[in-house]
Length: 356
Image (cartoon, rainbow, N blue to C red; front, side, top):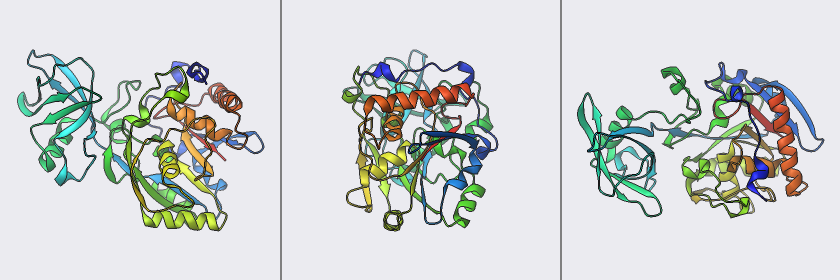
């Protein structure tokens, strides 16, 4: 399929610029695939779609302040966007000094970048490789490095969000975030509050967690003309035995599995093989129309950018039962037209969608 088929027009006023308060007070667009019906409610009312024994799966990764600003020898400023350590180990005591990064400007190999605090050099490093990916080597590692990153770095709010304040930055994190390792938030979880999670548990819903550290794979743009030719970058995930056991029990009892966000979907689809098993490793799974979903029943997500990999996944899931690629795309874009007409807010701080 041609990537241009997944383009759509979004008025700028519908790109959400700040967190919705309260988190669970946003609008929720519900689409029932079986009967082709839409419904519009408030997110906290999502509880009515859950039955006792169903399982809600969340990604408990935690975002670190990945956006840093350095200075070149020429005194020119440069943005260093941290992706992940090259060994992907985020244990603070074992943090590597070599990281995969993105730069907003061209840069010479081995040219030094310094990071200033109070006009003094606080941290420094250099680009040691620009082959397949850019590798940056800091002069510190371990706890000392991670402390300096936290003192220097900024939360990696997407560039289409303007004029954020400190409170907005603090909300660029899920309330259940636990395991440090992401350079971007799995934003479908933004709408859950602790009280909403407790309400679901009281209904008899299982709430379990996976970890997928969001890296370039999740937000890397599609640059190929044909969507099938895109290649995903690898991202690290973990599925615990506890989570796998509950998911298997959910299936055995013929209850439903609700995945919160594309990172959860990618993790569960990667880890599933004739059942759920304890697993960890790297996934580069790419899901687009025509994919046969095996691990999930319902999908909670945000509204995604045009021509993006999350949009491909959503199109595939919307029409999973028919497996008609063109129809998948048409259904999705019609739903997005309805969301735009009803003035839903889009993207990271935007509102939500539930596909059942």
